[in-house]
Length: 337
Image 1 (tube, rainbow, N blue to C red):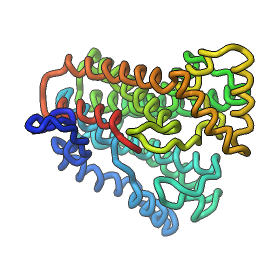
Image 2: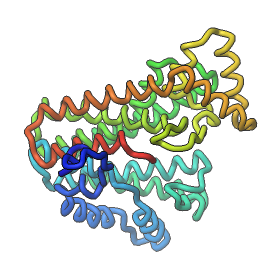
Image 3: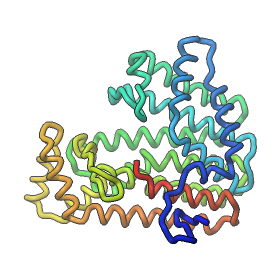
Image 4: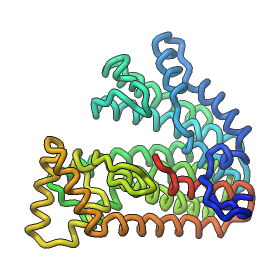
């Protein structure tokens, strides 16, 4: 028997597998994939070819999984749950296609991006198409409450990105501003998944708000884990330094800079500004962050958000959905990529 990644019989740690976590909603997820494919179809041959390519290279499907498990834990999966999951995937995929154009990125999850294969103009139009499909899916079914939730998340994601860009110029992000950035950039979408799931199950207002708080805590922990990947640990692997090169001020670095005097802080910031052209500066910054306790501090904060998320699930009735939600939260913390 395995509980939270630990085999009770042997006492050994066994990483949770996403397939096992999906078990209570496996049939619903299969049905969702069919409905989602249908929602992306077009009579324009080029557009249909591109959307088919997007569907084939989908990731772990964690966002719809949060929707379905939240719905199951809060009253039951219903037809609006499928539409809510599709809405989130459509609008989020639209933002990813546009992001790749903005970032001039030619790869996503190991595959060529849409703009790499079909150029920027077509990619922007594909993103617009996906956005409109999501809007129509909700409007045609009077899912105004779900549309409001997801639209607000997309708004916050845009604001978070712009706030981060604004602050990156001066490298002056405080810990409070950092939390606001990741709340908007990352946590807002996971929050929307959990709120949509609870709303689609016709849960009462208190439960919907509770799942909103749950999603935000999971999202915050998820992003801090992502930030830790940049520095590398025994569990995570080799440091990449990508955030440092892009002058993104993440929690480990923010904490480390707050532990030193003005002159040392100025010296480190100079290295960050030149890190894109001088790889040795990246290594020096990473060593500085580790020596200053930045990794330890960020890990503690991540675990605190993790604990808050689990405490909220304690308030829901025990069920297979609740158990899988707990495992999914653990999965986001234990993942190695």
